[in-house]
Length: 125
Image 1 (cartoon, one colour):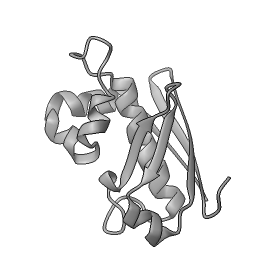
Image 2: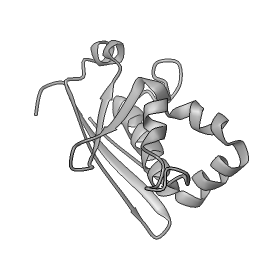
Image 3: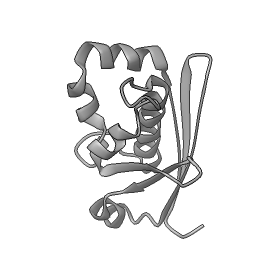
Image 4: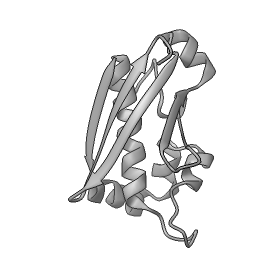
């Protein structure tokens, strides 16, 4: 199953500035939020936040359910590999419900946009 999503980084930045923590708490866990700060640990990295948004949207699209009753933003868990690449899993419950074995993700940012593509397998890669 494949999913893709695209978002304007400025749209995400505007939402962060307008709604602050309320916006971030809606779709990012505390651990994910920690990954969204720049090296100074003070400033938010809007590019990364936009990337995380697109990852979660792409996962929901790959599963064919969107974000809603069957799958929430916080059911999709993003972390980083030791080399800094994004890594994605679902909560244990959702992995079982959807029969997901593995999720591969690619995310990029350019010209004010963030895009993610996701491949979900019911078998190990």
